[in-house]
Length: 179
Image 1 (cartoon, rainbow, N blue to C red):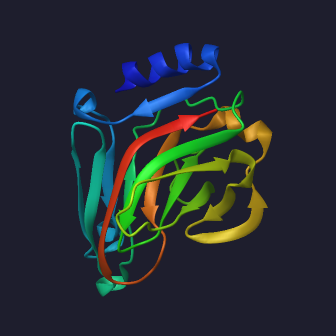
Image 2 (image 1 turned 180 degrees about the vertical axis):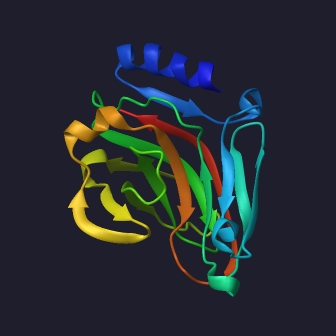
C-alpha cells in the first residue's frame, strides 16, 4: 500500500488529484483497526475487502469506559497542500463516523476531523472542504480548523465512530479522492 499511495501522490498530484481506491487489488493494505481496548474498552471491529471497497464493521461497547472503534492508515507522508477538497464514496449504517487527518504520531496531539453521516446503507459521494476539518484533541473539539500550512504535514488518514453510544456499525468505502 505504501508504494501504491506513493504512486497516487506522485502521479495524482501532477493530475490535480490523489485517489486512494480500495478493492480487491488493494487487499494487502496498511490500514488497521484500533479499538477502545487500548484504554480498557470492549468494542470490537474488523476490516475486510470486497472487489471494490473496504468494509469496516463491528460493535461499539461502553463497558470499561469504552466507546470507539477506528480504522487507520499506516504513518506515511500525505502532503495535501495542493488540494482543496476530499471526495469520499461510501455507505454507512448504524453509526455516524468521522474522517481524521493526523499530523502527529502521538495519540493525544490534535487531529483534524470532518463528520461522515450514516446513509442507511445507500451509496453516497460527498465532497468536504479540507479547511473545514475541525481540530479535535482526545475526542473534544477545540474550536479551531485545519490551516493550509498544516496540509503539508498530514501523516495518517483514518475513520472513527463519531458517537459515544453502544451499537453495531458498518462503514464501506470505495475511494478517497483529494482534489
